[in-house]
Amino acid sequence: MSISALAPDRPLVVRTDAVDDPGDLLGLLPESGLAWVRRGDGMVAWGEVARAEFSGPTRFTDAASWWREVTRGAVVRDEVEAAGTGPVAFGSFAFTDDGASVLTVPEVVVGRRDGRAWVTTATVGDRVPGPGVPRRGTPRDPGAVGYAPGSLSAAEWMAAVSEAVTRIGRGELEKVVLARDVVVTTEHPLDPRWPLARLASQYPHCWTFHVDGLLGATPEMLIRLERGLATSRVLAGTIRRTGDDTRDLALAASLARSSKDLEEHELAVRSVAEALADHCSSMNVPETPFVLHLPNVMHLATDVTGVLHDGRSTLELVADLHPSAAVCGTPTSQARAAIAELERMDRGRYAGPVGWIDAHGDGEWALALRCAHVEDARTLRLFAGCGIVAGSDPADELAESEAKLTPMRDALA
Image 1 (tube, rainbow, N blue to C red):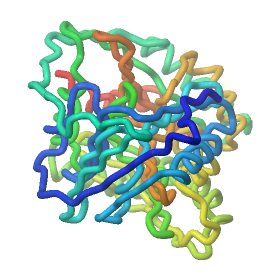
Image 2: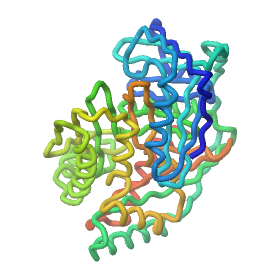
Image 3: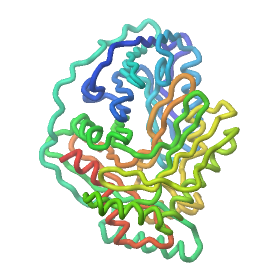
Image 4: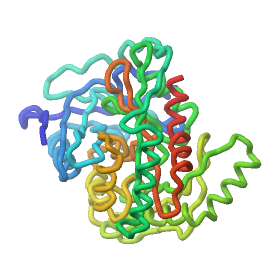
C-alpha cells in the first residue's frame, strides 16, 4: 500500500454550507473533476487535498483505516449534516488484488439530495482553499470515433465462453463472468464531460460516475449504507431490448421465467446475502426478482436490505462483498482462476467498486460496469461482461455484451 498521507500536525479542515439549488450538477464540472450523479442528484467535485493508493488483498480495509485516520483529526463545520456532507472521499478499486486502487479527498464538493443542496470545502492546516467554482468551458466533441478489438476478437471471446460452459458441465464451477474489452480512439482529446452528460441524460436511473480516469453509468449498487441501513441491488440475467414496447414486455416476461437467467440471478443474490448476513441483525431478501428496464437492456434485479449491527463502514462491507457472483462467479476462487485464464486481459478497475464514503462511514459503492477507462488523451478501453452458466450460448452472450457496450458507444458518438 502506498499513501499520500496527511501529517498529524496538519489536520483536514472541512466546512459544509447549505446553498441554493445549483442546477445541473454536471454543468458545474471542470474537465478533471469527479462525478457521482443519479436522477439529477448526487455530487460533483474538483481539486485534491489528499490521496491514497492501495493494492493487495487488504486494499479495502487499508483504505477504511486510512480514511478513519484522516477524519479522526479533522476540524469540521457542517451545517447540513446529511449523508455525503462534511469530509468525503471518492474512490475506485481494482477488480483483482494486484491492481491499483485509489481514494481521493477533493477540495470542493457540490451536492444535492432530497431537495437540499450544499457546498463543502476542504483544506489542510492553514492552506488557503482554491476558488469555489473553476473556469469550466464547453465540453469538447471527441470528433470521429474508431473501434478495434481488445484482448480477444469476437470469435476468440466466444471460444472462451464455450470453454467456460464445458468446465461448468464438468462440475468445476457453477458460474463465471467473462468480460471483453474494446479499444476506442477519438479524433480529438477526450473531454470526460462529453460522455458523462450523455450518460446521465440517457440513463438517469443509473449512477453516472467519473473517478480517476474511470467513467461510466452503472445500474448495479454493490452497497449503500445510511444511518445503519445497508442496501445492495443485485443484477444478473439480461435480455436485450428491441425498441418495440409490446415486444419488450413479452421479452421481460420470458426473462422472468428463464431457468438459465433465474439460476444465474439466484447465485448472485445468494453471494451478497451471505456476505451481509454476519453484519446485519435483520435482512430482507425477496424470493423473486423484478425486471429492471433500461433503455438498452432489461435485467433481473433484487434489492437486498439489512440493518447493520456491528458499526462497519461501507468500505469494510465492500471488503466482504467483493467480488460478488454478479461480476466474478461461484465458487469464487474457481471463477477468479477461470477469468484470469480465459479473458486474457487486465480488467483494471472494471467491475470493481466505485463510489464515495463520508466521515461516518456511510456511502455508496457501485460496481464499475457500462464503463470505460481513459488510457491516454485519445484512447479508451470499453468493457462488458456476461454471466456464463450451464445453459449459456456463446453467440447469445456476444450479443448481450454488445448491448452492454451500447451506453458508452452512444455517449461517445
